[in-house]
Length: 244
Ligand code: 6PG
Image (tube, rainbow, N blue to C red; front, top):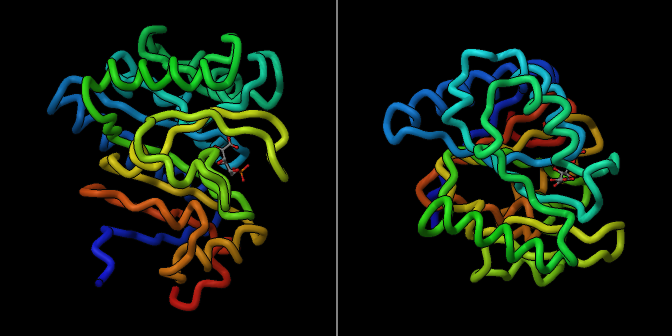
């Protein structure tokens, strides 16, 4: 069957150009959705790649922050003070610099008794915010060199999760800490899904994810229903693609 996914692959000179593009798209989607339904919902990933984006967004004071709801795609089950806490990074680089009400920020709790309890709590929050199946206006994703995205790792049961919106992921292999992650049904139900990838270390996995239709790598399993899928790559990450 032909690939019906609305997929766009855009290659930029560097991360600076990628993030300029994402700021423009974020602005466009936020303004449109606030006009149409009164709010804009976005889920953001951790990792190093989005740091520049968060710093740029922090300067966009005119965005409709009071109508923007920020959720986390995933989180490491470590305290806020830990340098690996995703919410800490997003808060320090972006959220505390803009006029967003506290009630619009939806971190994944790491102060409950277990990652499982945290996942359940987050699932309840997602379900009550969206009142039905969570459907984000925008989901920002990264890709690991092993093909993981969010905290959905290769060959783990998390890839088959269909029922829950958020699940706990135990440590294994290269995953050092326990994590909580959104699942494919939530990611795939978004209007816009944007992968950002930079650097030569990602070139192999990018080729596999984009060009191998049979790939079982988690990043390759992201399949938006009605929404649009963007791969925003710098030249180094795109360097092994056969068609450019
Ligand atoms: C996280 C993520 C994860 C990340 C990739 C890419 O919290 O770590 O959500 O999926 O996006 O590992 O990470 P880099 O941007 O650091 O390459």
